[in-house]
Image 1 (tube, rainbow, N blue to C red):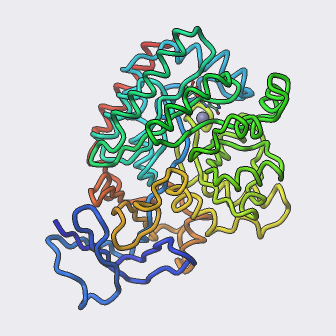
Image 2: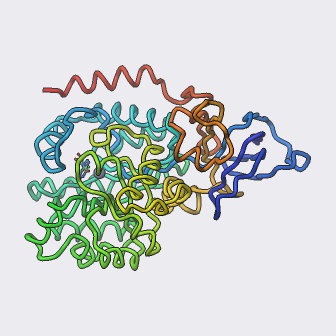
Image 3: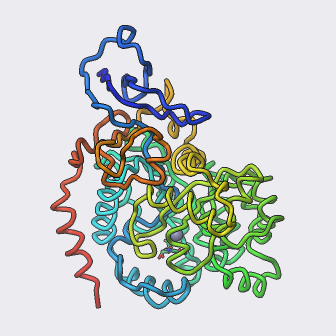
Length: 431
Ligand SMILES: CSC[C@H]1O[C@@H](n2cnc3c(O)ncnc32)[C@H](O)[C@@H]1O
Ligand SMILES: [Zn+2]
C-alpha cells in the first residue's frame, strides 16, 4: 500500500530547522519512501491524501511515564514526592489489578494520541495489559515492568521474574512497535544487590535499563546516608551506566555528575511538569546541553502532572530554563522541539527507526493545523509550535503509516467505552 500525503509544510527534524514548504511525503509498507516538492516527480500512489497546508512533523516521543496512573489523576495534589508516593499512590496502586491497568492505560493512550504522541515509555505493573493496549491501539512504546525492592525476598524474586519474562516475551512484538527495558524503580527503593541482579538480567537479555534518578534533594541526602555517596556515583559504582541507560528526572545533579552521565552516554528524560508540581526542582538542562547531552522529555504519570500532553512539556522546556537562568538564549525553541522528537527517539534507543522524517524511517508523524487565530500569521513554524500551539491543534496521527487519528477523530480506540471503563475501574478501588 502506497499513500502520498500532499500539500504539507514538512519539518523533518534533521539538522537545522529547515521546513520544506508545500511538500509531499510517500509512505510505503509503513516507512517513508519519498519526500519532495515537485509533484511531477512524486511516485505513483494507491491513495492521495491532501493535507491542505498543515504542518507535518515527527510525532512526539514521551520518554517517561506510568500510563495507568491516569486513574489517580487529581487524587492527591500539592504534596512532595515521598508523601505523595508512600501515603497516597502506593496504597492505591496496591489495589490495582489487571483491569485498572488496562483501562487506565487505554485512557492514557487515547489522551496521548490526541495530543500527538506516537511513542511512549511506560514503567509499571501488570505490563501484559499495557502491551495489549499498545498492540490494539497501534501506538509505539518502550515498556518495562518497574520493580520496587522494598518487600520480602519472595516478593523481590517474583517481581524480578515478572520483569524478566515480560521484557523477554514482548520485545519486538506488535509488528515491532513494542520494545522493552529492565527497570529497577529507583536507588532508594532497590537495594544494591537487587540492582545487581536486575542488571545481570538486562545484560543477559541485552536490553537497556530505565530508572528514576536524583529526583529530589531528599533522595540525594538519603542516598548519602545509606551508601555514603550521591545517587549518580552510587549507580556508576554499581555498573548501571555500563549498560545503555535511560534515567528519569536527573534534577539534582552537579556539573561533575553531568560529566559522568555524558561520559557514559546516559539518556535523560526531563519531566518539567511533574518536577514543578511535586516541588522537586528544575533539572539543569542548559548545563546538560552544553556538555553534549541530548535530554528528552517525559510527562511522568498523570497523577503528578496532571496530563500527558508532551507539547506542554516542550513548551515548559523552552520557557522554564530561560526563567531560572535569566537568559532567554538557553533552550531555544528548536532545541525544545528536538527534545520532544529526535532526542526522545535516542533516549529510547530507537533513533534508527523514528525521531526524524527521512527515507527509510518508520512513518510516525503528526499534522498540525495552522488555521486558528492563535497560529496567525503563520510564518515561523517552529515558533508557532513551541510558543503558540496547543495539543488540540494536532489534527492527524500516523504510526507505521497507519492512521490513529484523522481530523481529530480516534480511529483505533473506542473513546467513549474507554472513558466509561476507566471511570468504572477507578470507582472499584477508591476507598
Ligand atoms: C514500580 S512501577 C512505577 C512506580 O513509580 C511510581 N512513580 C510515579 N511517579 C513517580 C515519580 O515521580 N518518582 C518516583 N516514582 C514514581 C508509581 O507510583 C509506581 O509505583
Ligand atoms: Zn516516574
